[in-house]
Image 1 (spheres, rainbow, N blue to C red):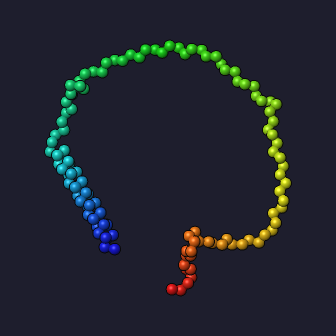
Image 2 (tube, rainbow, N blue to C red):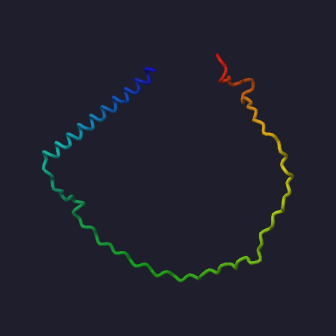
Image 3 (cartoon, rainbow, N blue to C red):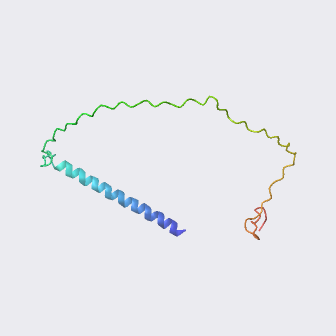
Length: 116
């Protein structure tokens, strides 16, 4: 029982410490941004080069493809008829509850209504 409570307390303590660390880091960032003036972006050597103008060649026109002929519909096709099945009528049998047998031979579950 004590190990469960100890685990929960350790988890809450770790969560509290992580929240304290995040709030102090955010506060430090706000102080740094407030004291330093915003810097202008300096163009780097790679960023100062203009991108070359790319030309894409035109694609050749699509060739004319022959239109495929669809096969004629199967007009003479008929589905085969299923044979009729004549089953005997179901005899009226009284319903019996299923007998619950144990899955392990020689083992029976204790009766819940039995007194100890």
